[in-house]
Amino acid sequence: MRKRLIVLAAGLLAIAMVAAGCGGGDDETTTASISKAAFIKRTNAICQKFDERIANGLAAYIAEHKDIEEPTEADYARLTSTVLVPNVEEELDEMRAVGLPSGDEDEVEEYFELIEQGIETAESEPIALAAEEEKVFGPAAELARSYGLANCGE
Image (tube, rainbow, N blue to C red; front, side, top):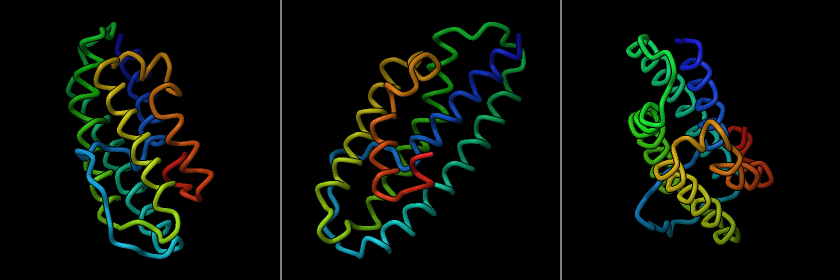
């Protein structure tokens, strides 16, 4: 029934918010240096923007797929590949463009790598987003929160 798709989308939205700031650039590295405070401010704004974009994408997906009664793995994969992954990849690209905070380059690169790992898991195991959300983006979210990226670690 449609309620299951809504539950799926709500779960993916929660995961997307946890993963905010997550994306997949092809091992791009950023060399520009900025202050930690500037990085946090700009990156939190990016995460907030993409949280809203993903929420809107999920709402549109639900509206377009009202006929789904019992979501299948293919439904999870389609939702992941059309809504979540493209947005998270673009989000990471924008975060990388901010630059790396001086002295914290390794920690921020680790965060980016954890996000990329989450994207790979989401693409290879889309059902994991609903069943084991912490497996997908939990490590990145935990690092984001500890670094001060409140909007990126929700």
